[in-house]
Length: 50
Image 1 (cartoon, rainbow, N blue to C red):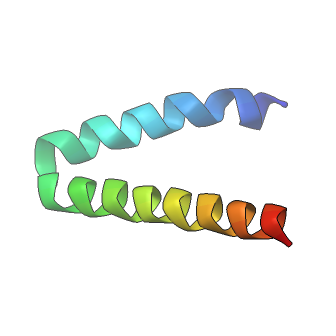
Image 2 (spheres, rainbow, N blue to C red):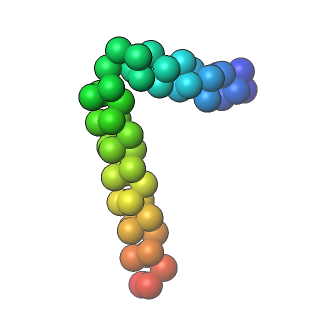
């Protein structure tokens, strides 16, 4: 459970590091995460119809 609780803080730390040094990779990471969300949502909608 400690790992689960720490995870959001770890993400925040990584985001801060990227925001200062690698804005391109940060944008790429957010874009990939957004696409994963879109694909997951699309799959869920397809499964509901069948």
